[in-house]
Image 1 (cartoon, rainbow, N blue to C red):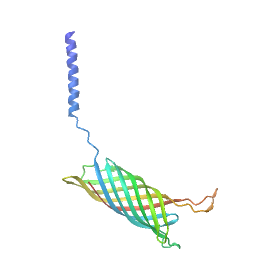
Image 2: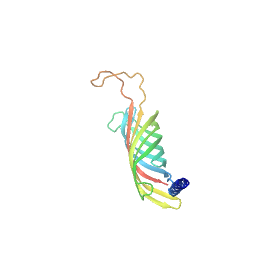
Image 3: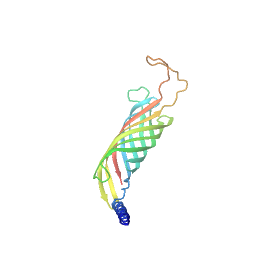
Length: 214
């Protein structure tokens, strides 16, 4: 009986030692990679502001902080608004926009690859300030949805990795046009109910430029 108890204690001790050895040999969990990202680009597309719709160009800038596959970003844009050249009213102005967004990387080459390739989507919001050329301003919030791709190169420096490359993105911003006092409900086509015109303004840009980070 004594020999049986001793054998059982010895077996338990061996199992505990093996578990301790495995725990000591297991590598520590790798922390999520972190990086600061900055970029500047050009905007080409169309803008809409309260029924003033037309081609638009501008510039974009952003800075972000990435943790793993998620990036928190601050955005700034300046772009033109106005009627197309063939419109009779020729209303024109400039829009300045600031915003914030959360970006998620759907697919990327990883933090250790020399080649940077990143396909991402983004959701955010902002605030537009539109100043019309001949007087008047329009201030309003908006929502933004974007998808894009980053291509670049990752190199080594004494203070860590650095990246530089190009980006291309398609951005859509949705804002609300101001209400028109006294506007009547109408049917502009066959309908079952008369309504006032929709107030949704859709601005769409192709955004492309350079990015760099550390």
